[in-house]
Image (cartoon, rainbow, N blue to C red; front, side):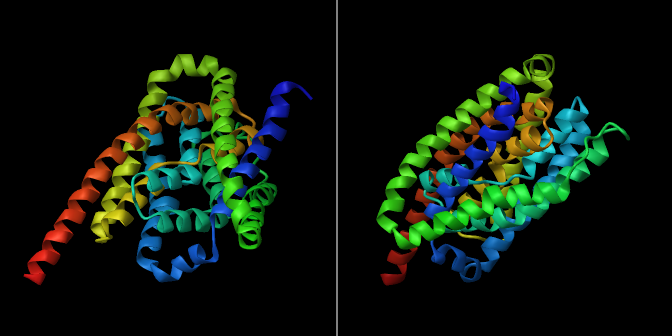
Length: 302
């Protein structure tokens, strides 16, 4: 087995398993109950992530993607919502962390079915007949279940039985997740360097448009359905920040094509800048909302 094959078949699956284990360690039964406690916010987030986001990606890919491979890569990325990254941004922005974690938990189960379906549509639509790779949908669903649902479930059990140890493990896994993502992006860039050089500006246009429009869509959904400010912040990150690790599994391990991964590589750099920028404005927005609430309470008490 050569080094590239080893990276595809061993490193990426193990990395994703560790990431999802960390998510499970952060979950409690209360997070699952939140689906029923705040059904409107959860429903808005799920529709934004699983339906509207892939539609947005299809439109953008059809209009501005320079190659079919970049189009497919953008759509697969859009089909892989949130993850621990969006949870971290929600926490740092003082958004509704319970909502963010709940959405991530629910989508971890749903993406077993939605990611293969969206990937199939992207390959069928953008690649010429006879050129699309065969997509083993059932095997892909099994692989996603094995690398997402199972480690999340194991993490939740560990959290329930050894709560204190779980909290300590989470910190180590966060560091491991960051390092793995760094290695993933660097390796993916090197493997697809030729295509990246030729289409960097066009790929950046696709990645930036997807990132900005998806964040704007998440923010707009929160405002349209009159969610609270913390909930709107979390919905923005959940819809606007994608799971690069899961996307890499699909395009590098299942489809085994580096060209599909270059959108995710460019997106990873852009997303950090836009997410941090929104984090700054989100904190200002939340502070103004809290001040207004305090003024209303003072006026009512006077």
